[in-house]
Image 1 (cartoon, rainbow over the protein chains, first blue to last red):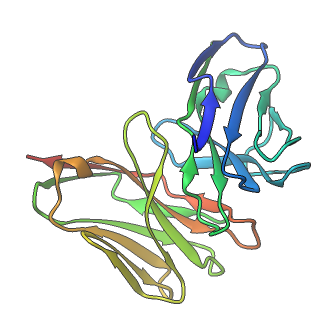
Image 2 (image 1 turned 90 degrees about the horizontal axis):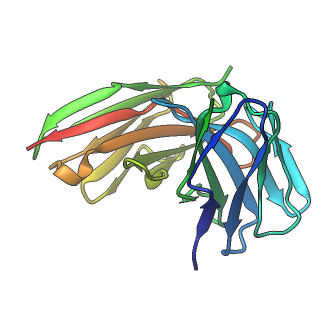
Image 3 (image 1 turned 30 degrees about the vertical axis):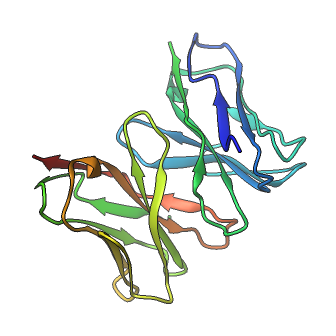
Length: 112
Length: 113
């Protein structure tokens, strides 16, 4: 198993641009999450999904959108990027144990 | 709102000594408390967790204690080693959520040789 993979690793965006952060897991986990981590802070939940076709907002969803057309993929879309979205983004999935223990390597996004 | 406070923000200990990181949570309905270790440039790694029906759990050099009455929980690392240097996060489960967690702000642990 490759686990949770994320692309790209790094990206610089200009204000107002849009992009999609990709997340894929090959462990057949139903639950998938998107977090952002600002410098010196813990993780904040952006969106999560409990299965294909089902998504829901977390703590900080504004400025983002997600979709879950398959169990494996959970892309995060940024529309009209803003400097406040400069952060490190982590995708994660949860196995049947219910423990949040599978994280992707992260995407470092800078909006200038 | 629900929150988790974590202290200290930075902890420097001599190699071989013990390290203790403390967290306080606000939601009395929280029943699951994991701890994560994050090394530079990597995602968080679950190192130990505890549920509200136990007061202490140990795994080799790492232990977690929980005081439900005071809404405190702590991470204890004994015989610290250089590879223990990292940022550690505590978290608490969120009321009525699908495995959602509220995270502390993190503790940077520095092990001095």
